[in-house]
Structures are given as C-alpha cells and as structure tokens.
Length: 115
Image (cartoon, rainbow, N blue to C red; front, side):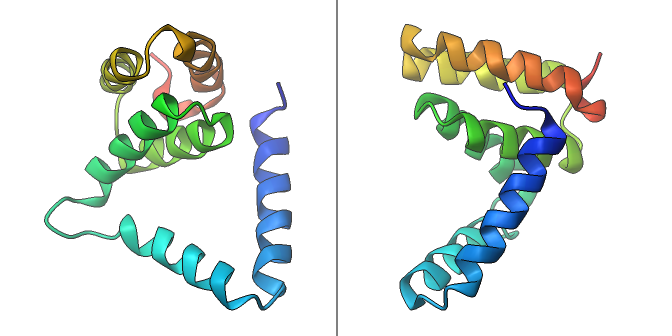
C-alpha cells in the first residue's frame, strides 16, 4: 500500500492532468462531485462520512483514503469513523473486509483519526 503522501501527490498530479484535458464532460463531473459535498440540508462533515461509507461499500480504496482524510479535516473522531465503517461493512458484506482493514491502516497515518 502506498503511503498517504504518495497517494496525495499522485492524486494531485493526475487531477491536474484531467482538468487540463479541457474535456467538458470530465470538468462537469468534477464540478458536480465538488458541489455534492458543499453544505446544504446536510453539512459537509456529515457528507464526508457518508462518502466514506459509500466508498467502502463500493470497495474503492482511493476513495476511502480521500474520505478518511476529509473526515479528519472535518473533525470526525476515530471511534465515529469506526462506527461508520461498521455500517459500510454491514451494507457491503464480507467482501469489504479487506477495504476496512486498509482503512484502519490508513487511519494510523492520519493524525486526526489516531486514538
């Protein structure tokens, strides 16, 4: 598993390339994704936790890492994130266990989610 620093460096570089492609569909999707997490009836903090649960159930490790970082930035505590991962496990089933394991490993790297 790559380090958090490697993940963030790669993600940033590739996002710049995607944004620089000037493809209208991709630009629209990225904008829509950004807007989905802006405050509305649900605050950004809650939406990030929802994103984590959905990403885990869908088994996307990159998305899990991104949302773990965002959950830490938004102030979620480790126990709260673990409870949300339990919901993801229930929704996604046993096939999500490896992703939950990697989420726990990733939380060790993220200051805001350490015990």
